[in-house]
Length: 336
Image (cartoon, rainbow, N blue to C red):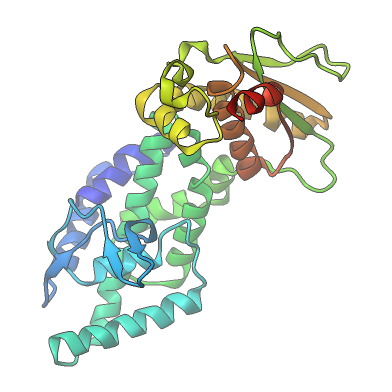
């Protein structure tokens, strides 16, 4: 029930579409009761996805991040693994792996299972998992304004659309079904789908890191300049001895900036601003957008930020990027 409410509060309600709240809550309760009546209950990981599975060099498998585990239905974890949005597994893979899972499950409990009932309840947990993911993306993206979660919403909605059109949860939930149809409508999916560059798109986004001691890089286009973000408000790893000869491309520096500073919060704001311009520039056929990140030495903070924005724009818009670290020769010379 909590996963369904998470979806309601952080995704569905954010759409601002009309629905009958009490009828939906009644359907939530009916589905939860239906799924809770399972013959077998075992340890349920609850966040069973590929990034929580580690394979060590000796080919041993390990699991992490299981602090939310509890006793529950065996269908929940396999639903979570096979339907994680970013994996985007083909349907035939999902069906094959589910059959393999049921076969292995029968061997473990040493008796046959009612596979039709198992599949029906599995479908219910797939639906709950898909909605829980949408709730998480909604919370992180729509409420906390973290751009990387917003980019995952269209694929999650496409997964949900395929499921609604092809699977059945085995219980009548009319208001719930109405809400799902709203979520998978072309209008809603388009609302979260960013415009993307094509091979014909002329826009090139120039991203520079620079040192304020040497000045802001000139704009060689005829636009007269672009965005300039001052990274000096972020704690400087260059003042810490162990990081002085390193730069924003090195993992220890990246870990420091992500874990010990407000860098990620800063960049979420940058992404939101730049996304508006990139979307508009692609639509209007503009050729050039310039974005500069400056810090004291042009070595740590600005380098990390420039790399992060370039990665974000490539992933979200597929746009051409020209990335330059203007003070690279200086910090490479000092580190040698």
